[in-house]
Length: 179
Image (tube, rainbow, N blue to C red; front, side, top):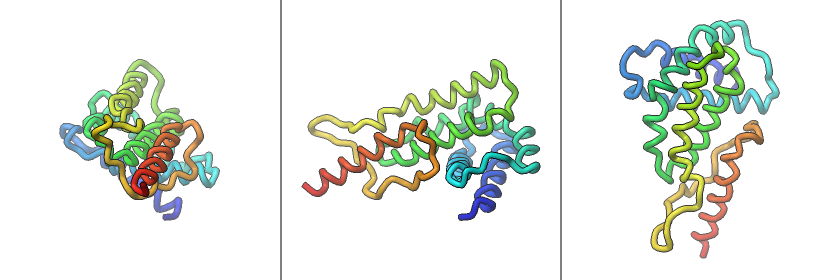
């Protein structure tokens, strides 16, 4: 998908979260996180640093509200805490999406205690399910990881180190299936 199409998808899902007026825990925030992941991964891959005037305006207007809805209003943690080992690739994609929101566009959210609280809640939601990154299970039971390869993550910065255990999990899962 082209960068322009990914930008449109990201901005559309940003608008959906921003304009939702109900209990955000019942709004599926995962399409927004997927769009965020794909768009910013592609931006990094293409070495795009600047934002369009339209993007900047929308991010300045909407991102502070979206941070709150995903952060302290639990719009993201509600879903992340339900992930299972079969969802380990989603964990990494959404975690990278979250990190992109913090690193790449966090500058559009005014600094202060509310921003810090929202970021902490976003990160904490992933900490509760971090066990998904461990080759898990007891001797009698192993996590059922996906059989397909890890999703495309070219363009994801090296600092998104949660991808490395996933590659190991996938390699180990394939090894166990072949023996």
